[in-house]
Every structure is written in C-alpha cells, then in structure tokens.
Image 1 (cartoon, protein in one colour):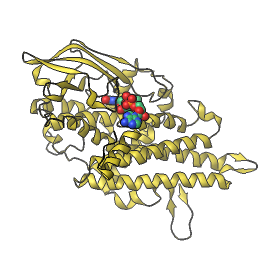
Image 2 (cartoon, protein in one colour):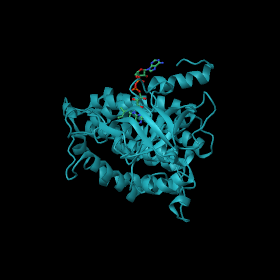
Image 3 (spheres, rainbow, N blue to C red):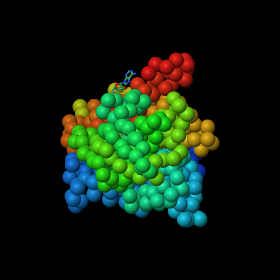
Image 4 (tube, rainbow, N blue to C red):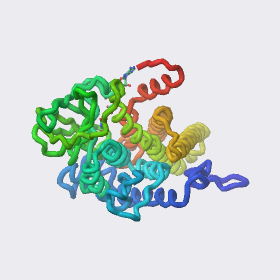
Length: 414
Ligand SMILES: Cc1cc2nc3c(=O)[nH]c(=O)nc-3n(C[C@H](O)[C@H](O)[C@H](O)COP(=O)(O)OP(=O)(O)OC[C@H]3O[C@@H](n4cnc5c(N)ncnc54)[C@H](O)[C@@H]3O)c2cc1C
C-alpha cells in the first residue's frame, strides 16, 4: 500500500521502514515464508473454521493437528529459537533463528488469526521451552523432535478455576507415591488441552513443580469449552483425579528457592508473551489494511469514505499506533537477541501492544459496514473477538500494569 509523498515513496505496511532497515536478510526470509504460508493455507479457510465448520476434518482436534503439521512442514518454526535443538533433532546443520525472526514470523502468523499464533506460542514458547529449560536429557530426546515436527502436540496447564491472575493460589497437588507421583486438581482454559502431553504445574511439599502428564494417564481427562471467540482453536479444562504418573515425568530443574517457585512457569510465560507482543501487531495491521481498502472504494455522499477528514483522522491514528507498537517489538527483539530482555520489558510491551491492537480492531469494526457482523464479509470482526482473549490470557492488562508499577515504585499492588 504505497503512499504518495514529494520525496520518498512511503509504504503504509512499513511506514518507518523498520522491516526494510532493521531486519537481516535471513529474518526477511522467515517473515516472507510466514506471510506466504498464511496467504495460501490460512486466509482462504479461516472464516469457515471460525464458523465452526471443520470439514473435511472429522473433528476440531483433527483440524488443529492438521494445521500444526502444515506449520511444521512449511515453516519448521516450533522451537526454532532453542539454541541446542539441533542436538536433539540429530541434525548437525541446524541453525536456530533469532528471536527477532521468530517475532516477525509470529506477526505474520497472527495477521492470519490469533489462534494460529497461539498454537505456535503454546507449542514452542510455553511447552518446548519448558522441556528444554527444565527437563532431563531423556525428556528432551523424547519430546523435542516430535514437538518440533508437530507429530505430537503439547499443552501448558497453569490456570485454575479460582483465578488465573493469582497462580500462587494453586490447588492442584502432586504427592510422591513410591517412585511416581499422584496428581489431583483442575486446570481451566488450557489451549489444546487434548494434546499428547501436558506440562502441568502442581504444588508439592517442595513448592510448585512442573510435570509431564501424557494423554491417557489414568485419572487424567479433558473437556473442551464452547466459546464465541478464538473459534479456530481449542481450549479445555483438565482434570486430575488420583492421576498417577511415573517419577521420570517430573521436570527435574523446576526446583526454585522457597518463595520463588513460580519462577519456572512465569519464565515460560515471558517467552510466550514476547511472541504475543509481536503477533498482535500483525492482527492490528490486517484490520487496518482491510479498512483502508474498503473506505477507499465504498462511496458515501458521492465520494469514497476515505476522502472524509474524520475517516482519515481515524486511519492515521490507527497507523500511528501500529507503527509505535512495531517500534516497541523491534526493541524487544534486539534486547532478547542480546540477552538483555527482562520480564518487565515484556509486561510493558504486552500492556501497550495488546490494548492498542484491541482498540484498533474495535475502531475498524466501527469503520466497516454492518456486514462486519457476519462471519464471511470481513476479517476485522474476528480479529476484534480474538484480541479480547489475547488481552485476558498470558497475564491480563491489569496484571501487566502491576508488574510495571512495581518496577517503577518498588511497591507491590497485586
Ligand atoms: C482462549 C484461552 C486460552 C487460554 N490458554 C491457556 C493455556 O494454554 N494455559 C493456561 O494456563 N491458561 C490459559 N488461559 C487462561 C488465561 O491465562 C486466564 O484466563 C488469565 O490468566 C486470567 O485468569 P482468569 O480468567 O481466571 O481471570 P481472573 O484472574 O479471575 O481475572 C478477572 C479480572 O480481575 C482482574 N484482576 C485480577 N487481580 C486483580 C487485582 N489484584 N486488582 C485488580 N484487578 C485484578 C483481572 O485483570 C481481570 O480483569 C487461556 C484463556 C483463554 C480465554
């Protein structure tokens, strides 16, 4: 989308030329592959999936598994930032991608749909990261290659019914029994709860620890939720009723000093939140591009809507916010690639980028005709519904303000 100026040709899809100037060539290749994948494999189908139609697949689980397979085959992105992944893939030519490249890929993926980005975030940033960071060598060998290729899917069970914002108030317990463990409790709203392996956080006599609970473990069941948003994805409740798992399924490095035992699950969340900060820029941009196109062609009172000052004021506000969010994620990427990224940086970026993306998608819904309320006519309505979830999960808007507020003041407002 070119914009005419006297001196330079400006492109609204890269207004400040950040992609052009800041991305390395290999990062541009990752971006372009993700964009091409979304255009070919996701955009033609996403509205049908959003309506709840999964055919030719038998079930929604089959659909999610087939999308994950396609992502793995076309982009190979699952776990691709993990430096030593090549060792577990037994591939000496393996080269990890930069965190910036991962981020920019997630931006393109979420321009398709937030559920698709969520699938990547859960598999890569929550689950593969947890196993890579806190698992034994045997666990890494067993799970990382299969998860990278999406032959198996994983889910991350932290949230409980009594309140996701306060994970310290965890009720799920794990008690040693002989060489194994027995789990009891409930998790709710777990993305891909049907998965082959669940990374489950539970209270033990040594504090909160992580466990790998495999599908079919006795006493382990799941039930998926019906929802009016995130419709191309699955979120489920998990139930553990005297669920017995072998001793070797404990993630052995999830030991933290007393009072710091949430550090392991929270470190996984920081990884995933980093990706969210990038992803929502893509969703916001998808809404913006749709609205520019429609308002330039839809005539009202004899002229295109986009010729009205009020419409242009709104379009400029949207583009300005998208570009501001874009600058934030480039800086996050740089900090992460240099090992200087703090969870508090990520909190401020999630706070900003997600709420801006929500505001943008809401405004885009406002700017489109009433057909926006159908499933078929436009994409912005779906992004609007999805983004409200993105604002709630992985730390609500309020939770992130308290994290940043604590950094500024030294006072805990939780
Ligand atoms: C589609 C979807 C997928 C999800 N996937 C996963 C997953 O894979 N794994 C997982 O573990 N979880 C997952 N979640 C759960 C998600 O992380 C939680 O919904 C989130 O953490 C919020 O928890 P809650 O829903 O219990 O809301 P609550 O924690 O009950 O919060 C309700 C409201 O109270 C506010 N609030 C809380 N504390 C305070 C305070 N001190 N002061 C002021 N306001 C406060 C919150 O900001 C929020 O607005 C998913 C959720 C959804 C919707």
